[in-house]
Image 1: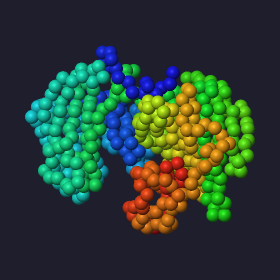
Image 2: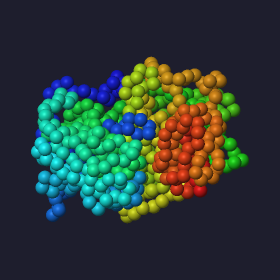
Image 3: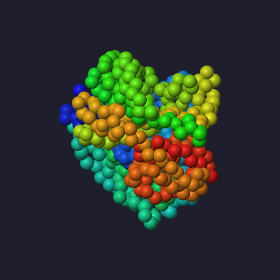
Length: 496
């Protein structure tokens, strides 16, 4: 049984979730799954409030605190206090909230006055958020409890408050905040929200958007979207076939590197609670066209190395997972759960990416170390498990991509090997000028195609769709970058 059709669940039975405190924005120990858009398509972020600490100023409510950071030992606080958390691109980056009396506060380091919310507000009651951030075109947004009704969602019936919003100004080209609303259920938290940060920082370049709740998990019960687990990613069977393209660029002008293809046929599968082991026969098509055969190879995927990443909350961290082996205690950051359709049977596919950069955690001392000019990244999905891996060790770049497969009898792209269609390889992508100052021109790729620009830390700093024209890079800091366009081999460029 494949997991594609089980990832989006709609409950048809009466809920048995334990009652939460009434009108909590994020009920304690509930995984709330919110949908939002990214440059790569629709995505899901997880909000898990799991800890409460009483203080004289009120109860501090922590997201993902008890969940911890796998591999961090006793160094979790050092990680959260470090600069690496600034790279967290969570669309609603709430690391903690403060609940005082009947008010919940969210503080942002760039703004003195906080955002706050009144979950217990009566119908007709409102309050005004004031922000003096210099980039804003207006400084006040009023939130009003407009009504309360009984609603049903995923077989759950609950009271739901609706909150409307009105600003004391508008900005040309910006979707007004009045187009959106908060919806708060009595026992299951926010059913729809606008990121809290938007109320404090809302220049014309930062549009408002809504994040609807599409699923929740608590006390072993799942309703709506269910976050995939370890075995949802690693489920191949005997007879499945994977075809890979590997691009190696040593980084020296006198050595152009090479491209090889691999065709893996699964001959044996062993699955336990914490390990999936594939035995396979491999055909390698060398860059010369020569075919090399080998049998009995193994690929081992353990819950210890992958489960902590895929089952942790999104936009979060782990230490010493995956990786090349010669670098210990790397700090990894995972991204959103991207949703897409299976390219053949159109079932739901969930993808996640994980990347490490130069940060290393010395766990015995809870101190930081750095490895310059290094990053490692993975992409994993519920079709085939790991589908992309790139390792950059200055100056070399080694990337492997899954380009075709036959899984559970379903074939995508050409799974043969040793024929012309499999040896087309990537077009030689060229970028100019290099170094670039304002614009980057591309040659050798077919438009339109998705692109992303990655910095020396391994972080995606720009992404979008390349339509054939120049890419504006004036906003990038000076330094070394990689540009990926479609399935072409990534190319380095310097920003000056």
